[in-house]
Length: 168
Image (tube, rainbow, N blue to C red; front, side):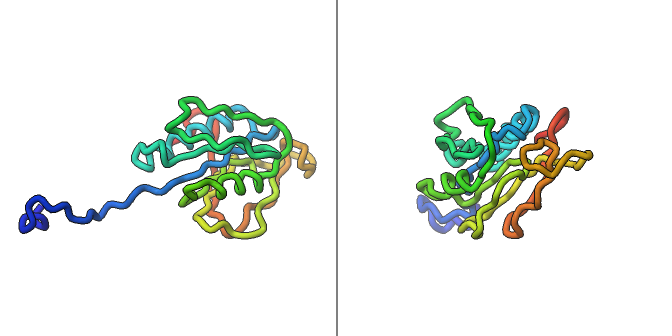
């Protein structure tokens, strides 16, 4: 480039930054379907592409009522999504935010049937919600048709579609 023509052999600072380090918390509770878990894995793959293929910058925390071991994508080819019990994604947030180095963003993929942290995390937070519509079922959290309250105002919320054509 013309900018470096006057300084041959000198590497000048770039306008490019390191892509963000992203922790993905996946809701593996019993209310999340296999199709939704499949959509969550498609989202993880899309996030890895969005950070320039830097799999070392993406970690996955499967979580139902307890957070599981965080997996770095560069270390694991397959992501085992263990769970099936109740839901408390606050433990997933704690596991993700406690990682070192700390993430620049936390992405939570969930049906929303969870208690949320009381305080805003120090990093950007995106909640990917699997859509739920009330179809005459109860408002009991143990009912898979339960429609929860919306996520906190401090989170950016996007809807994750499952099924054919889902994913990006």
